Image (tube, one colour):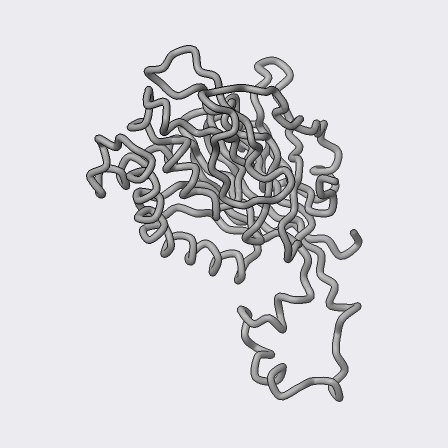
Length: 297
């Protein structure tokens, strides 16, 4: 990685210790089906499947810095002046053009809690020397109602695992870690690390906006999903524009999920495990990394 560089996107703040690593494309499903307090205790509306994403219930709260490690392959792919096309000439000075982006490959996405590691002194070499450990997939088999009843957003291997969820108290949803596979699926070409409290807050606002507080059946839940899709589309479009121009960026739009988002190096649907660094005393997660060169096989 001789040409690798560390791209600093800035910081975001989480006041709680819950973070979610997930494709932004799945935020609507997360809000509607997994962070929806209005379906608590309603057996037919509870999720029948786990969603692909990695939930951290013990992340260190505070200021988090986000980075991408990016490799510039311009030396290998540089065109000669004779090969330059008319389109290339037009886009030569356009930072958002494909001509400039295509020679850069994002190798990994990294986030650190600033109380443990000052981002001003961070280097690629220092990142590699940390005590990284992989987060294992959530393979426990849980059950709710009929195990063969579930909804799938995308039907691929490892995608939204077909399991039920057994709950001891029918008046509330299970702890959120039970609803996620701990396998990261990237479908939209980008991945985000979001504060769970901001996702829950955004979900409540959307439900109140559509007056769905008394939701009682699956059809209403599906309608809510479709309405949320329309509300979240501008937010998702902004995220796409951010990552196209800078590879990694902080996301902080009013009344929407807060965190950071990073462009991946894949142009197809890929599954990953993530790595973390934990506090040796409290076991809190204070660093998170996704290596795009090591997909899950």
